[in-house]
Amino acid sequence: MQTFEGNCLCGKNAFRIAVSEEKFSTCHCGLCRQQTGGPLMMIDGFEQPDFEHPAHLTTYHSSEWGERQFCPTCGTILFCRERHKDEGAFCAVNVFALNEQARFSMKHQIFIDDKPDSYALAGDIPSLTGAEVFASFGKKENNDA
Ligand SMILES: [Zn+2]
Ligand SMILES: [Zn+2]
Image (cartoon, rainbow, N blue to C red; front, side, top):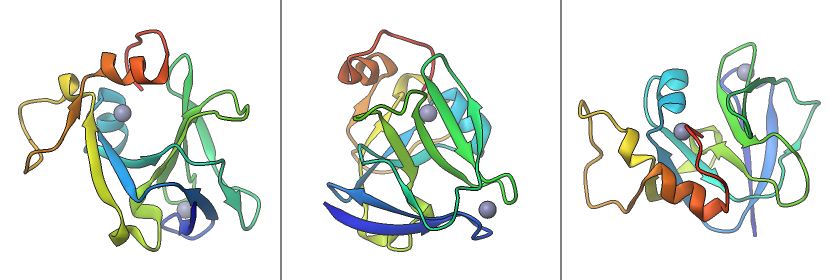
């Protein structure tokens, strides 16, 4: 595990996360694109974040099992996570909120079946459909992440 520091655009959220591999996923699902204006690039599978000050976050319940957390001051999306916070709960963080973001490389793109034809990532990047993503989580097939 390697520890990285990150923050939102305005700096009200300063946090630390422990990451097992320096890789991120790019999500093309409709929720990510509508919320952010593009595909969302996030590191997944780390322990819960540790905040320097109390977290300054708004939580939006975006699906039956998932929620998105963003800074209510600057709007930076920081986390996509499972709504239950039990040990082992899925939590992903915006790779570009980290200070050492340049150390991370793209692992794969997900929800490729939701990607519109209007853009495409360059290169030969491994792709997973939404169904494949939920299967890898051991979850029932759902709409979006
Ligand atoms: Zn902020
Ligand atoms: Zn998504």
